Image 1 (cartoon, rainbow, N blue to C red):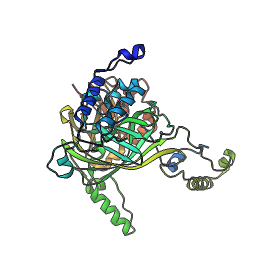
Image 2 (image 1 turned 135 degrees about the vertical axis):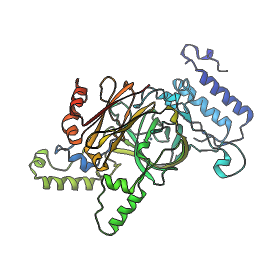
Image 3 (image 1 turned 90 degrees about the vertical axis):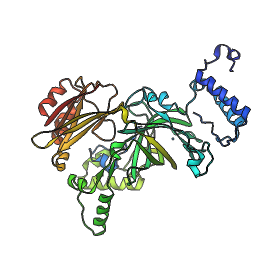
Image 4 (image 1 turned 180 degrees about the vertical axis):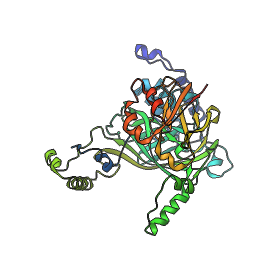
Length: 458
């Protein structure tokens, strides 16, 4: 066992998990473990809008080591502990990232009570052989000195939460902190789900922190309500129209005709390909057109647009990521994940009511971390005319954080009763949205909403 006495007064107090991990390492040496290549694993929001869309909001210009024997693994383990006793006292990290992030994630708390470690596949699963054993690297991939490890997962049925560890041989560049005080980091993904034949591409935001200059740990959230539509036929129609030089207009009715809504099964496989890890630079370059503010203000809209477009194209500002605003790491890091959705924690309040115009709410679904409103329309083309507003039992507006506007986090809200409204889209954007944080907002929405209902949860 570890002798605290030799550390005297400066010693950290190792936790039970630390002692257990230490004893495991001793056993590895004694048994001269058969498996080699084991790793000693040491161990947001990027909102990147298209620059043209950014500048349309006004004319003010803004001028993320392998060891081959158990003894080597033990040496790295001990070295890390001596160099960072605080970190050591919190071991293990892999399998406990959700616990480490407790209280720091937007959608809820107590993830550790729901998440499960991603267990390594057996050799039989991995390569078809008949011998059982742990497959090396099933959830750890290294590309050009950057190692990504998938640690734990939890699927609520509405969303998939995955914890991730990113280790870089080179130190991460200084990264901008977002409003939550976390590094602004996102990942470019290609996702293939066993329940959906259509490949999905996404920019997924991470919530997390740097453990040191070379190590980042965090959580990614994938909104499954945006992954359960098969639009293969729609894309085919769009391609055919493009080849024929025709314009293919996509509206709610076309979406309904050429896309299929899919059920998310209790078990599914996700093939996840992370092509890039992208961070927002703490000190980005200043965009400069070469003109003074006075000269720019004197230009006509057409002249201003031309100057801005030319400056952005010539400087590479229009690409994402770009070296002026971002640092990034190219992959790809590929994982095959077997996911089990925990439908037992889902509560569904059936509403199935509409107003005289044929707009209403089908149901409201609550999971341990999010609440989702499912709208109901007699004519799907009307969907674009309405915006959902969700208030908690205290009448507070439940804020959308990312993804679908119909899904909000339950963290810090009283969801014993939830008030759900459909407002006129333009009226909401022009008049109602700006009052969300004011006293009396519920009374305002009660008066202005085109449809209203309340639901109750345990």
